[in-house]
Image (cartoon, rainbow, N blue to C red; front, side, top):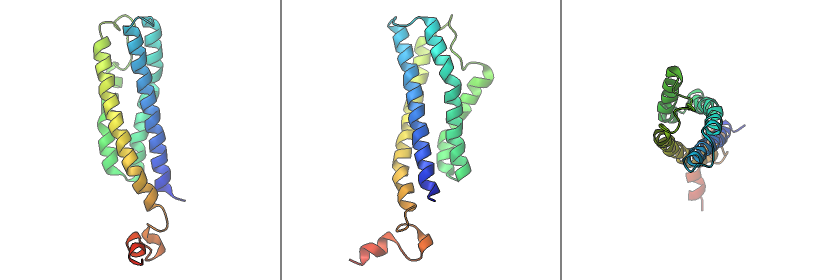
Length: 155
């Protein structure tokens, strides 16, 4: 089985899920700012998504550690450390009574995380073809001397 291809498919799916969670949180904050939602509804919507986002980001990073992609692990590690710091300090949830004071700060933090998740998305997108091509028998060195260079030189 082609485990490297499956790794990049899982990484792509989890990264898309992280982007969707974060965009929904930004939409909730924008709706609160435009007075389409009340503070309690916004806080409950965002707070219900914070822990799944943290868990998915930790699993996303741990996936790279377990499979030996250490560069991608070290790229994703600062976000995991930031999430762990927020969780241990108790700052990971949005407070209903303080949401209007912290609205601009919350939006800025989430926009910054959106930029970081987009960076992860592009890194996964660019690494995905390399993983899928290296798992094909023509490109892998497991099957003897079959190599892309030798097949091009035959013509």
